Image 1: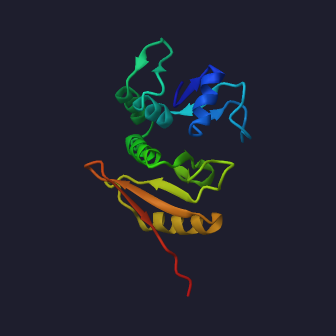
Image 2: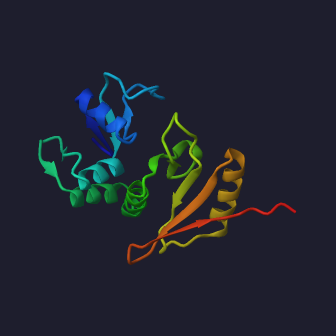
Image 3: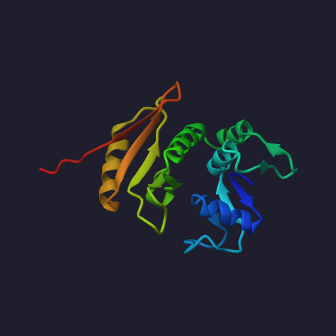
Length: 174
């Protein structure tokens, strides 16, 4: 549905949420537990990742099963940077992090070591494709935001060969 996926079966939604904080129960802003009786809303990045991991079958409104490539193509229609975000999201998940949307921080992802409610997200990750390059405003934004929310701000750049480089800045106060 647009840039979202819906898991209508609440039991299946609870299982996905419990196994890695995937998605958001509809109508519950900050779930206190993984027990809820609502559908689960997933971002398109989460849909692609879970489909890639064979943990989710994504279908369109007509009931056609979507491949991971088709989901990525849909995402690219919404944003030129979708594939780069997907690659960064996937790598962070594969490394054991819990990756949640970072919109409230003005960035792509908030990254947890254990999960929301268990710890605070120590990292904010902003994805910038290498072809765009990091401009001074990105660095200033990173410093201002990281200082105000007391988190490490990381810029992830995806190279043409799909390697990901992560940059974090240490701010010096004289």
